[in-house]
Image 1 (cartoon, rainbow, N blue to C red):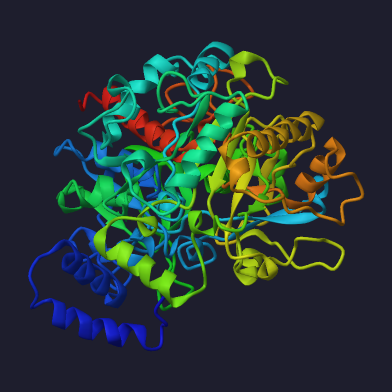
Image 2 (tube, one colour):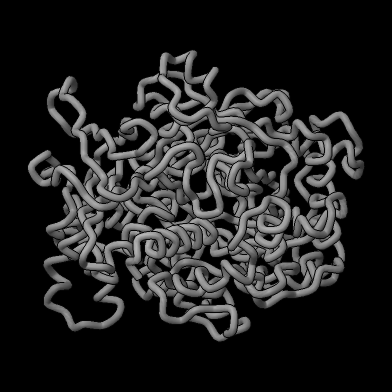
Length: 631
């Protein structure tokens, strides 16, 4: 809402003027906004080696623990380990700081973080089953990782998922009852809605509930919840409780209109960044893990801001352990670059195999597809987003006051259900994301989702959509299809090959269709039916609109990732040949090396994966502390 050309200078003037005003909430937020937009970086703490000062002299030659990847799990691991003043911890991040307005604002800037300098901006291979499209895969390249660029939905998953990890995959210590304390440890639940026995109140991570927030689309979101109930799915005030099934307003990692990412929560707000035994470095790419025989003894770091591109890597040693927390794409990439992976594949890239393990296999990801409805005439006020100056001014005012639409996620409601095609022990395999907006920015859609205007595809040009309406996203969250992450090069700066193999298992599309059918039922029988017009139909699909064939083809043409890759360094019982890590998160076949991120999931959980990633970070830190008597 401000242009790069003149916005900074105007806000500089604002900042000087409002500095003389009283300390009201609006003035405080205006100061904060002006500061965020005019600052080059808010990271000035001594222990952060910033992009301007990153250099070898600030790095010690060795640390007790080296955590690679300052993302959703990595920030948690480093923060918890450094609580003990007797150990030294190095946290390495290839991206930059996240302490800026563009990251901290929940609503205004969120879509523009993708494909920015804070996104690795990966791309999948061509997916035959999804209309020969390439999927755009954002991954956080900044402190906080994906928690700094995601849509801030706090979803733990179905309790049955964790019990299944334990019972079917031999992951001792990972049942729902055993992981629940780690969810609670992180959480500061700032809501009266839900069961207090399954929420924490003293942790660093702020979690709010949409019920407690006043925003312009709250009425239509509550209509969504009631419509799900009319369609046979009960209202569930707390899908993060002991039962996930049902519909609810969203729970969010947002407080007072500010994103609560893991860097802000676990490094800054709790003061961890100022601990003398914690060093956080940005703009350093970890090119490989260093081994002596079968033991991980350190990492090789590449200064991405070095003036001389031929500058040699810096070797930093780990006295105790190396912990890899690079996520389900880059954790397998780093492991394979370091000699941990399928021997035949490593040989293709002239990499010596240290441990022959199925790294990069078992890739699972969630998918959703848009189903859109306009508002009936006279009900446009229930929605949000008109391209008028008045609506933009309202949005700006919301941010100033820390309330309203500018201070929540784009996804205001969710529901979880089962298709009936999988056994009950698998948990919910379907989810609906409710977005009380219609997309309009065609260029942004092309950048973020690879959606291009095609003459033979109706609905592909978003610029013609009406201003007001809703988007419901049927979501496949327990896919049977499994893909791979493989190396394209032995160059650590080159992207890996990502092949999710979307919809290759026919049951995935069948389950997807069941979710589409549920959405149509909810929108035609509940309170939403009173305010919504006819569904936008893709007239280029050669099937009757009410047929399952139409729904299947529409999904195939329009589905895209929900940004939840998992499983590529899967956990299993010790000695399991299909597992990369054991229940203590140790990489099998070597010592001194663990993995702590969503890549360890045997099966992806039923729901958005940021909260589980944070839990994994908490449990990993606890396992390490116990192993080294640091508690």
